[in-house]
Length: 157
Image (cartoon, rainbow, N blue to C red; front, side, top):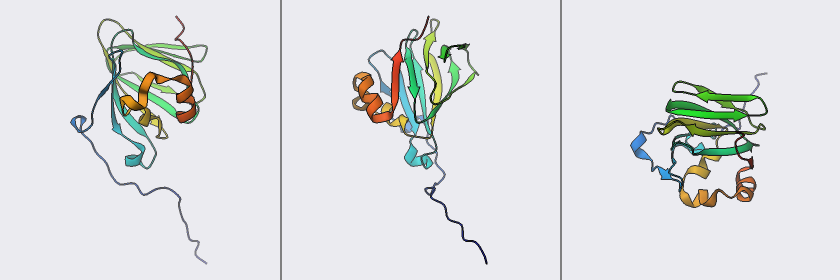
């Protein structure tokens, strides 16, 4: 007897987008976020975006309860802190993996903006960065309720 196999995975088609095909969203602190792939385009496998952070800006310590986060530094320098002991000053060409469930945060260092690409695995969190309305105030209570991301404090010095 032949066994029939089925899958619950959504149908996924090839997808491509140039940098000019999506709107960059600018935060009040001068950082810009440009979502390049949403879960809808990747079968919810990954959300992907390009970000630029002016010197001194970044994201406070936070915990993703649903997804892993990756960062790849294109330009500038970034301080990335995770857990109690992981701390790296990342320069162009550096890949960083931030596992779900572990507090982490980052800040642009130096005198020039830091540009990087970020991904969220599985997809979902990229929706937060898709519009200013969505990012309104980056309220920690709202982030926890809507995206299961918990802001836990500033980046340790």
